[in-house]
Length: 171
Image (cartoon, rainbow, N blue to C red):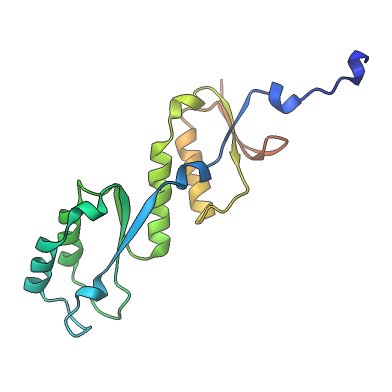
């Protein structure tokens, strides 16, 4: 076989590192606290009853999870309710989102990005894997890019064989 007939894997030789955010999202567990379950007659949150319920709430069930605090009922929830829940769960749970499923997804993404060992990408050419089932895709890839910029010398989007350049560090 002649040298010109040899198949060369240029992607492998390029030194590109691929980061797939999905790899960091898979083991994150979530729990939902729906304040509708604490409403008196489905309408109002009574402070005394809510405080008693929170006192009895076993915080251990929220350890190692990302928690969403929401209210799916058509009720006005006072700010102190979220504050009380936050004070009960802070230090127990990994992260807390307030709002809806989209808010939860953004907190999960932030949590996943925080788990990445950035020294693995120091002075590297990085490809952010573009296909997959990442929810809140635009948010996820923008935040991942923001986290990569101080570490990587270049950031691309797509697959190693077909990338879109996003960032290149000035020398």
